Structures are given as C-alpha cells and as structure tokens.
Image (cartoon, rainbow, N blue to C red; front, side, top):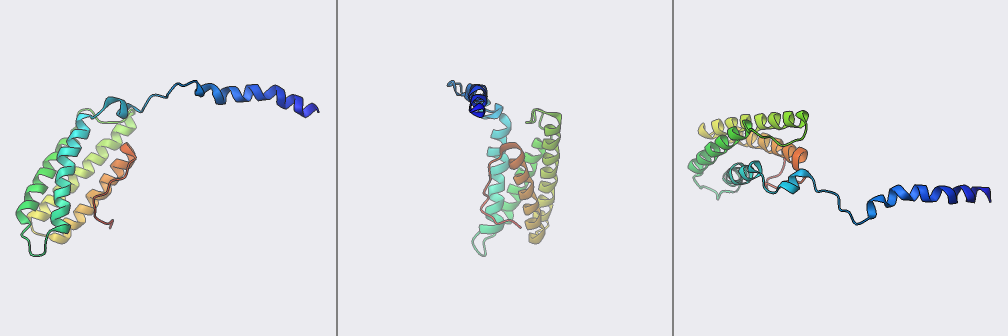
Length: 159
C-alpha cells in the first residue's frame, strides 16, 4: 500500500512537464520556414538546379545520335557561373559559424566541380564529364542533407 502512495504523490509532478506543451501552443517553425523563399533558395532553384537539370538530360537522356555539344557547353557555362556566385554568397544559411563553414566548403566543392565539368565538356571528354557530374551530385546531396534534410531526385542513379 505504501508504494501506491508514493506513486500517487509523484504522478502529478511527472505529468506536469509532459502536459506543459499541450496548451494549444504551436512551436515556432524553423527559421527557413518562417522567412519564406530566400534569395539563395531562389538562385539555387532558378539558376543552379535548372542548369543541372539540362546537364542531366544532355549527358544521360538525349536521343541517340543527337548533337548535344552546344547545349552541354551552354548549360555547363551557366552552371559554372551560377555556382561561382554561390561560392561568394554574402549571407550563407546556418545559425553558427560552423554551419556557415560547411556552407562555404560545399559551395567551394560545387564550384570546383562545375569548373571540372565545364572543362570536360569543352574537351568533349564524356567520361570525365560524367565523373564530374556525379561528384557534383554527391556535393548536392550533402548540401541538401545538411541544410534542407529533404532528398533530391535528379533522375540519375548514384555512382
């Protein structure tokens, strides 16, 4: 009988912290969700991702025999320019200096990958272009994992 008294005395104090958050108060959304579309998100969506999609199509999905050199050159140039802009982004995401360091590290990897891809396309080295593409894809996956936590699907299997 004594153990029931202890439980009866402790139960309200144990339940209070559990029920404290149940008063109809909704927790604040994460900062990115509160702010709406950021300039960086718009740049990534309209410039970086758009050109990466064109590169994906022309490297892997173009009809057999199609001359894709000119579209590849245009897309790789625009992708390179877009990633150079990201590498110097003035207001990186991340609340801590460590997160901002990760941002600039990934941005540098992305930029170097874009230069490598552009060079391979210019030299018509398809194997090197594909290798650079997959290197960029891994960098993008790391970026999405660290900053957005949602998967991306480029329609191309991992290598």
